[in-house]
Image 1 (tube, rainbow, N blue to C red):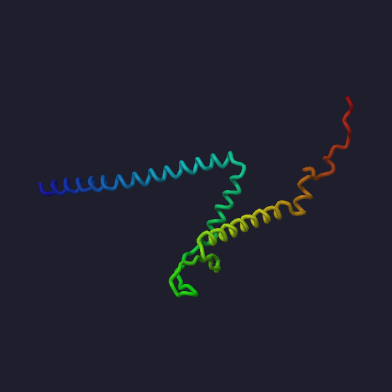
Image 2: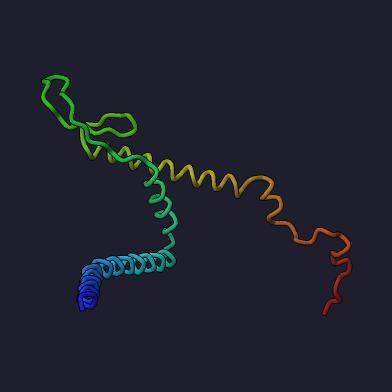
Length: 149
């Protein structure tokens, strides 16, 4: 009798625990599904957009560049605390100046990627072979001319 009561209590505790965990797990799965749907929609849009590759390159480079940091320091003239912005060791008075410097660094690094890409794919050795014939055995080349019609 007492064992049955303990089993029922454990069963009810398990059901209550499962019900308590059900909603957070369901919310997590819905967020995951929403992110996947957004990613698939973005991939579809990118397939239709001629400039999507450039945007993806800039987004990728943006992840690699450090963000602008806000620092509170004493003003050189008055000694009052003022906010300054630091990007790659350079100090900027306004956030917009620091963000502009960061964006210029991002674009420069993205351009370097495309210069390197051109250097690899337009190298002398690759250009020489790109326009040639696929046949390398001279005995397999056509040695006769077809009759004229």
